[in-house]
Structures are given as C-alpha cells and as structure tokens.
Image (cartoon, rainbow over all chains, first blue to last red; front, side, top):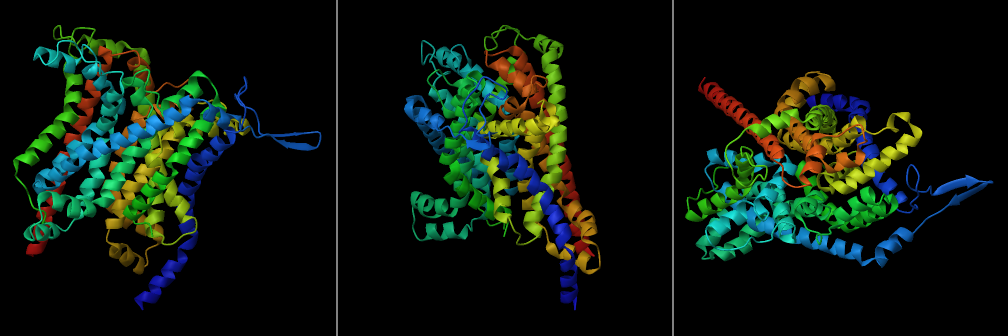
Amino acid sequence: MSESRQNKRRRKLPPSKYLVLSVPYLWLLLFFLAPFFIVFKISFAEAQIAIPPFSELLSYADEQLQILLNVGNYFYLIDDDLYASAYLLSLKIAAISTFLCLLIGFPMAWAIVHSSPSSRNILLMLIILPSWTSFLIRVYAWIGILRNNGFLNNFLMSIGIIDKPLQILHTDTAVYIGIVYTYLPFMILPIYTALMRIDYSLIEAARDLGASTLTVLFKVLLPLAKGGIIAGSMLVFIPSVGEYVIPELLGGPDSILIGKVLWQEFFNNRDWPVASAVATIMLLLLVAPIMYFHRYQKREMGAS
Amino acid sequence: MSSIPVYKTRWKWLILGLGFSFLYLPILSLVVYSFNANRLVTVWSGFSTKWYGELFRDDLLMNGIVLSLTIAFLAATAAVVLGTLAAFAMTRLGKLRGETSFAFMITAPLVMPEVITGLSMLLLFISLGQVFDLFSQRGMLTIWIAHTTFCTAYVAVVVSSRLRELDLSVEEAAQDLGAHPFKVFFLVTLPSIMPAIVSGWLLAFTLSLDDVVIASFVSGPSATTLPMVVFSSVRLGVSPKINALATIIISVVALASFLAWWFMAKAEKRRILEARMAGGT
C-alpha cells in the first residue's frame, strides 16, 4: 500500500522538478556555456579600432546576407612560432608541476591517512587552510623568499653554501615552485579520499605473501588509489596550463606561457579576435583532460 | 571502518614535517616581515608596525576591500541558492533530460583556466550590452555574475556529496506521511545539509574574494576589487604594505578556522554524548 502511495506522491513532482532544475540550468547555460560559443565566433572576426574592437561576422545590406569568416587569426597563430612554443611550454610546465605535486602530495596524503583518527581531521584542515587565505598573497610570499636579497639566498649565503645569490626569481624554476605550492592541496585531497576508501586488509595480505614495500606501492596501493590520483592530477594540470598570475609574478621574460600570451593579446594589444583564437585552441587541447576529469567527478557526485 | 593502520614510523613524521614546512614557511615569512621597518621587506632593520598604519591610510586598498567583501557576500549567497538547487536536481530527481550537459556545466568550471572563463564572460557581457542597457557598463554587476557562476559549481559539488550521504528514508517517510515536497525539502532535507551549505557558502566567499583574473576581464573602470589592487602593486615588486595586508588576512582566516573547529568539536562531542545516552535508555 505504501508503495502505491509513494508512487502517487512521486507523480506529483514533475512540474516542481523542472522548476528546481531550470533555474541553475539556465543560469549556467547562459553564463558558462554560451560564452564559449561567443569566443569561438569572435575568433573568426577581424580586429578593428572601434567599440567593441572586432568586426561583425554577419552583415545585411542590399538584400544580401553576408557572412564573413576571417580565418586569418588561426593562420597567424600557426605562422608565428611564439604561439606554438607558448602552448608547448605551458603543457610542459603543467605536466611537470603535476608530477611534482603527485610526488609530494601522495606521501602526504598517505601520512595523513595513517595518522590517528583524531589528528586526521586537524591535519586535513591544515592542508586546506592555506587555500582559504589569498592565492595572490601566497604567490607573493615566494617573491620575498626567492629574490636575490630574499630569505632563501640570505640563508644560503649566511651558512656559506653559496657566496653570491642564486637567480631563482624570474626563471622557470620559480614558476614550478609557485604552481606546485598553490595547487598542492588540490592533489592531496582527492588522493586522501581515495586512500581512505581502500580495504587495508589487501595490503596486509600482500605483505603476508611476501611482497616488498615497492611491490605493495606499485602493484596494490597506487592501482587502488588510481581514481584519486587521476582526479588530483586533472585538478592541477588543467588550470595550470592556462595559469597567468604565477608566470607573471614569478616567471621571467622567457616564461612565455599561453595564459600570459592570451592576457597580453587582450589587454596590451587589444586584439580580441586573436585572444579568442588563442583561447579556442587552448580549450581544444584541454577538452580531453576536462572530459576525463568530468567522468571521475560525475561518479563522485553520484549523478546517475 | 577503523581498520586503517596507524603508523608511527620516522618516515611518516619526516613527510609530514617537510610537507607542512613547505606549506607554512612562506606564509610565516610574510607575517614576520610585515613587522619589518625596512622598505626592502626582506632586509631586517627593526620591529615596526608603521606599515599597518599606512595600509589603513591607502584609500584605493580600503575601497577595494569594501567592494570585494560586498561582491563576495552577494556572490556566495546567490551561488549557495543556485548550487543547492543544482545539487538537489542532480542527486534527487533521477534521470532527467539534459542531465549530461548539466553535470558537465557543474564540473567544467572547477578546472577551467581562469583566462578562458574571464575572456568568454567578458565577450558575453559585450554581446548582451549591445541588446540590454543593463550590461552596457561593466563593474560590480558583471563581477557578481561571473563570480556567482563559477562559485555555483563549487557549492554544487560540496552540497551534492552531502546529499548523497544522507539517509533517504527520512525524506521518504515525511513524504509518505503526506508532506508536500517543498515542505519535505525545507523541514527535512535543508536542516540536514545545512553544514554543507555553510561550508559551501564560505568556500564561495573566499573564492570570490580571491579572484583576480576573471575580475580583471569583466570589470570596468568603475570597479577595482582588492585582488586587482594587490596584483597591480605586487607586479612592481615587494611592498611592506602588502605584507601587512597578508598578515591581517592570515590572522582572520586562522581565527575563523579555529572558531569553526572549536564549535564543530563541541557539537561532535554533544552528538556522541546524546547518542550514548539514547543508546543507554
């Protein structure tokens, strides 16, 4: 009886159901998804000195509808080596930073998981805490540490390891440090979640059967934590490909990453169509990792 | 699930020690040097609090703080409403049309590079501005919309993970007893996901307060947020005033987290005590 009553209640839901769904759906459709199509459209426009500074693709005059697609922006990106090398450098720096985050983040997540249950939450909070302070200010802190008369160089000189300051600030090394530092919590948290779900009797069993520590790590622990490692890596890799603030503040004149190129095309050159083309290609490069992350995250959120 | 072994090896302490030093030493250095009298920041020449005074006399920074706090408050509030609805739609309404695109719009903002989000939002506002007068000027409104959008995704993730853990039988019982779905939501579901909503709001608030890239794209000349002021200042190099500002932000965050932890620990203790007493009778 309760079954049929429940079904009756359920049947009453649909109108309100779509009301609940439609508000956030329409908001995200308009303000998140639609803008990408506009970026795509404007990447085929021509830069003009006007407000807004690009040409219209569609024009209607004398009973003629004209569609003017300017593919010149894309040819421009191909012709000038600057763009290709900026994309490659961004991908390389993002990939290496992700790997470094994994190298530091996995042991930390492991160490927190194997702490006593009461200290686990405190340690986890200490991991998250820095990201509640300002991101800009945490990047800024590294300027003070890495510069020539900064904390690190002063310290190394005072203990006599080096006698003249190392140039670290305004190099790619500083960019790596900045990215690893700011994105580390995003690597640790999903790995922590994954490690908490593991059935540790499996590890014990592997040990009992004589597996060495390395075998346990590579054959049991890492495969079982795969989901968390992938999610963490995507959370670090994807945003850092387009990172602008860190290379701008810590990088040097050679650290021409694609996020910086996009910014400069937009703000300094006021070439919005080229900036849009840069963004479009960056998105195309990131579609696969984003879909990969999406698949994992969807499972996590329990969407059917 | 208390079968996770607790290790007390030297390796574990070494990893934790090094890891947390890496996370906290830079922050500590900011705090220490904010009390340095020397303009060069990292060259120590005596204790001083003069940079705090200078900070409060900086009108540009102070206006930025007020604007940023206002936008963060409004964006977090709107994002909590939208994000909770989105989480509810995803976890409670079963199979829906357009679900795949919806789920994608929730996860993609989490990883989307900020320069892309910023540029695309601005181009949208420009297009809208040609049709609606409301968007012809960019400033607080456009920053608020942009922040609400990406914060909604974060809130949806936080709230949906809580909704998924929730015991459905209580909601079903309320419905079986004849409660209207809205009543069920407000009297049963909402109170039990409140902690997630609060932490979602706080997360959205700090994310909005922190954003410099998206705000730089979608803002107009009338609105300069705090991170935009800080960014233009630190681009020119270190400044003791920024260290003072950093110290204030760090103190506020540390204090707030300590209070949150303290209240949570107290509530947890009470819950355990109540459970024990209920079990005893």
